[in-house]
Image 1 (cartoon, one colour):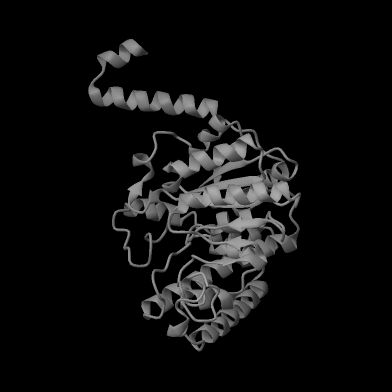
Image 2 (cartoon, rainbow, N blue to C red):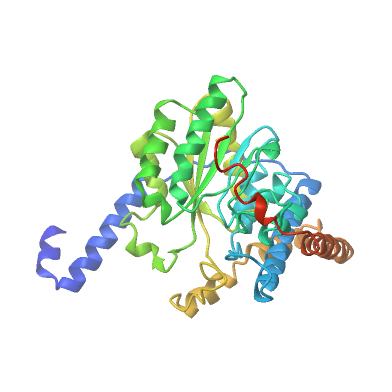
Length: 356
């Protein structure tokens, strides 16, 4: 093969080398399947409700943003619902969640109220950040949710630290953290994950590979075919799965949670999805090929799961109408509450900032 590559043209040589590299990588990273998880009809309906609620809350936030009511940016999780919901659905109430800005579904599964979500988006004085932030940069210790910081990869060492503290306290808790395809190329990713692996901490890291780090495509970020291949270097399990399949995401996360709770250490899971909107509401995503968006639209995670549940006889027209009616009322009430809530007082701006 080497002789033939030398005789080929530069373009052909590059393509053959790429094919060879991808073939070898695939052979090395062929992952064993994880045990099946038997979900009841009620659990499957719960997954669907959370995904639909995520989509509708997302739409409400974008509408409110366009009305000029949202403070700061608005970040859509359109296309990422199955990853966020399926993963968080594997956690228990005493587990820790470190979500990103596209993990609204994980917030909802963990028990976050719509009131808190809209109060936060509108930066009201009674929000979780008391009006100091209007995006996803907030924590809710009561629910064990610790929201993202702008330097997303910096969350990994923080989450690993919580996993270490939890292990020392013998809480039998798991820490689930998320990072994007761009953020996983930062040094914090390596340092945090390596520490978690060496110390066998109860830590699960999901790479949400949604094809673009802002406007940079995956092909310009990493030469690896699978980002989960990095797990081999840390000596931990690594999987690459369809991030639009909510039951598959849930199944792999259930296995990762089991391993973490049994003291076997962390797991790295890469979910392949697509960011169907721009980086934020102010980004028109004109750099994304239209054909690519059209292809991924056919894999819409919410619509796909709805078809599956209908075919299985779990979801009926009557149930769907009832879900949509209740959902619309919940969102309208929560948004109305947020819009009538007061902004923070100016004299409180320094509260909690300076030591007495």
